[in-house]
Amino acid sequence: MFEIFANPDTYVSLLTLTFLEIVLGIDNIIFISILTGKLPADQQNKGRIVGLSLALVFRVGLLMMISWIAGLIYPILTIFGFSFSGRDLILIAGGLFLLVKSTLEIHNKIEGAEEGLDKQVKHNFWNIIIQIILIDLVFSLDSVITAVGLVNNLTIMVIAIIISMIVMIIFAKTVSDFIHKHPTIKMLALSFLLMIGLLLLVEGFHVEVPKGYVYFAMLFSFLVEMLNIKMRNRAKKKEEEK
Image (cartoon, rainbow, N blue to C red; front, top):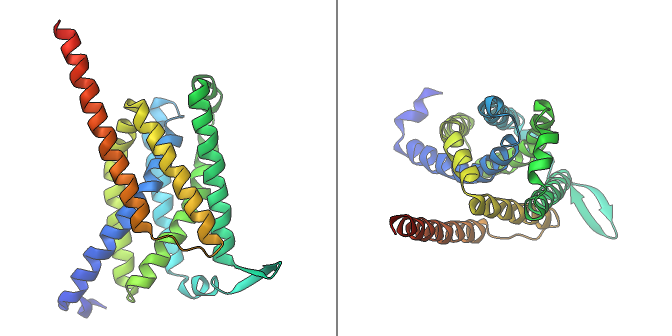
């Protein structure tokens, strides 16, 4: 087992996979941050830790069932001549869930109903956790499939996933606080989730969309919004100095 660490290629694979897992986990962090933001302040950090810990458990658990994951690619349902595998159905369900959830959150924010909605939701910690579990399963499947496709050593995959999840747990609060501090960033984050939901949905129908394009668009939009925030802060500072 430990002899693989004598090979320099092991560390290259480990770093590459860890980086990819962190990138793939960004959408998970955003989703968890938005949901836990509905909890009372004293439960938000607990919600984030529980959510990401469950994501870690799901990922490692799925890695231990590689043969089951491999079986998910085989068709189990055919509708009008179109075949769906277990993976396809999971992606479609996850995509629809994200689309509906993100659309409702955007609608509530635009209509100004978010504050009233928060008062109704903030009493149920496990309601939020169940929603996190549902989407964790979908993101975990995507994460594990990426790991299996990139590395053929189970030990490296498990270590990379554990490291990436530790990094995400460490920075989850910072990301969450930043999202909720800036309303425009929260709207942008919801738009990202809407895009990810659509991506999962079309992948379930065998339409492959290069994820690099999607993440580049997300990064570009984020950088533009950061410039907007900086300009607004500068304008506000000038107004205060007058």
